[in-house]
Image (cartoon, rainbow over all chains, first blue to last red; front, side):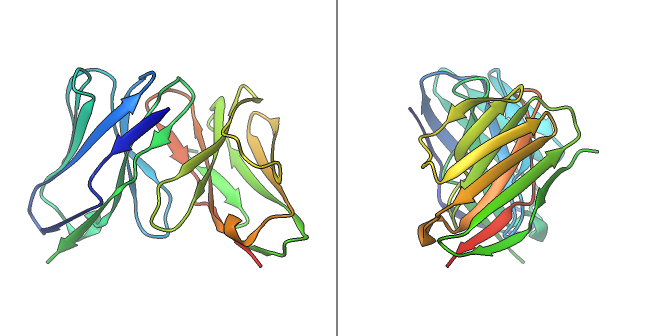
Length: 109
Length: 111
């Protein structure tokens, strides 16, 4: 089986930086992804790491260390619209996509 | 077209009813997924279709029956559901391991 651990909630102010950590245990590994989901909305893809290192996409960056079974999502220059749930997800096999418990990010003015 | 379209958006059904959820994508993706999501919980994988064949069934009760009529369509047939099956049902598709596209979901209430 697989398990993914991430903090349940993070609160920050506009303009701040937030880091959401994700540790995972999985029998196979085909990459770590991050998804954003606003209340009442669909999960939307943010980032994917298959190899160690940092991937940067605008204000969002994602990092992976396969040796530590660890990754994080970095949200910079926080905006009110970033208030949402953020999920890390692994592919233990090529077709399977399994989500962590999710981190609820609340951005305050 | 980078959309996954799900119908209906909302569904209320009795425990003796039979209903179907529909999902459509025209991105040429060969993998399609059904997820169940309860409030404040992560999406929970139910089924995966790869090249129109069922490749993963996460021990889902038989009252949920998936069907993939062609490469663009995915159905979920519902029969004799229980109130605890009330949830948001999400369909997704992907071509690569990098990115999955999700539909807006069907919010199902079983009464």
